[in-house]
Image 1 (cartoon, rainbow, N blue to C red):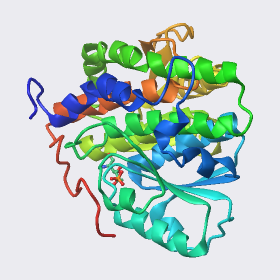
Image 2: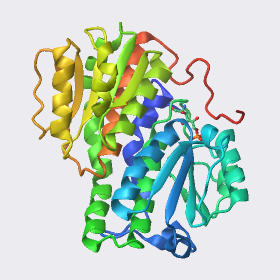
Image 3: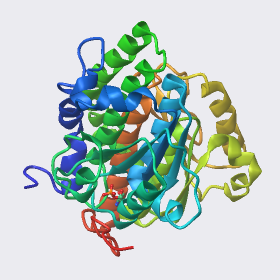
Image 4: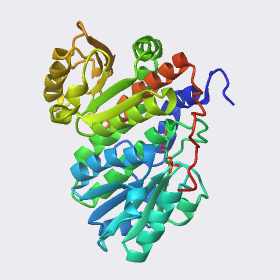
Length: 365
Ligand code: M6R
């Protein structure tokens, strides 16, 4: 039931503080991740993992792309991420000490399941799943499972499934990292950041009316560009996917550093540029990318840490966001992009919950 909300998508966006908390509950203490909460076999299976291969599609693939930054930074374990439909149709090499990690909301995505079944023949250390549907094929066929506690997701555009996948992936990363020398104080620092997430997402949801106002600038546009650096690049990809899916506006995401290598040629007054800019070590570099866009007459929409000193001026619209831990910022910064695409779609009058040509669960290739 939609209750007070006009669409399931909006309801699901607003459920995020609660479902992120539910995904955390019982899995962390004040300072640590409870490895046994990931399964009694978790400690044993994670002990000798030397490589992580992530497989997924669509939004779940973007969650995997964020996780790669975390896994390599915190656990120091090499991680590859690939869309299932590509992985399954190429000759691939899997090392025996690989953790094969599938991410799927439904647990029934045909390509993801096919990739897992195929990889099993080649052999690997363990199959792990991050999934939202208990009893799904993916859950049944995996050795280790972390359920996202998002509850049923009805809107075709995935929202709460994504942020709970990220929450589960970060908890998993900390467990893996502990086997690979992560200091206790660092773990405690990140666990604290995870516990702050529901409150921070609430603060972003309170910006709903401001984001609705901003969305008016996109209504008459046919194209848009999304930029981010580091783990915010997959967040930009996810923001662009949301906009395409439900508002049918062409949206492309680029790592901000690639701007000069091609996409800058597209920038003019008709091409809004959306940027996610938390206050991290890449902020200064991102700011110079923004200048490049502005100098070409591009209109910028910047979702920036309120402490980051990105000032609104002619051609630059700034949406100030709460200051968050750099590790958890991809989770918090996803939410305003969901709201942006939601409001653009509402203004355009498209079918928000059932976008044309798409199905919730892609059980055929
Ligand atoms: O159920 P899954 O997570 O395996 O689904 C994967 C994609 O089909 C899904 O994320 C799709 O991209 C969504 N419609 C995105 O909003």
